[in-house]
Image 1 (cartoon, rainbow, N blue to C red):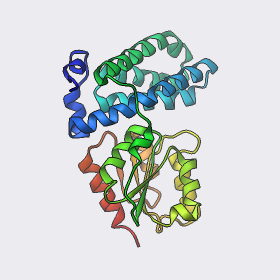
Image 2: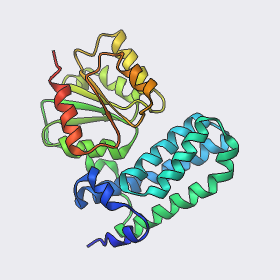
Image 3: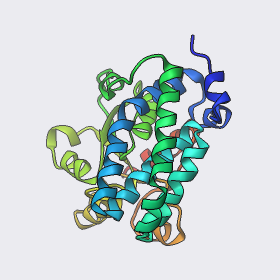
Length: 259
């Protein structure tokens, strides 16, 4: 049996994390996903820092910050948040001077999680096994944590089709075999490749909001972005972090807007 005191003694706010995940079983399952994906995320952060790509660096540290907050790794979340702010301001000096601090804390958390889990990470495929359903929802988010959290909530009632970014989402929407069962879309805004606003633009130009009722799930909470999103015929906006009840409520509201 896993000893949660290992996490608590090393600064993890597990009590706060359970407000999102609900129980330790869900927390542990989702933590395995984090453990499997974080090495590539950290490598991406290093790569973008080395080439001075502050726009994509900001996206990656934003994702790391969000993951850390979900699991109660508050120190890592705060450090990543500062890197997000400074990289958005194109402050390469700050990023360079404080990069080792970010990496040291990130690897401390990785080793802590490995110690707690006692095993390595698992592939995302293990969370995608679902019963066959005649209706589906499309979840578009660059975070495995969020995608798999929503998958666990709805897998008994829907086929949950996931997309890592806006490009994958539009590919799915334009695939007649995949799009026929989609009844609603939950869409993040801040994503690489094609972001959420670009997806919204595509939906508007092609009159798709009636066919695929859409709500926003996002960590972007600045007033300008929220007001911009509401200019599209979306159903509602849910800000991260959220809990299972919040997600169920916004999906029900979104589905009821089908015309």
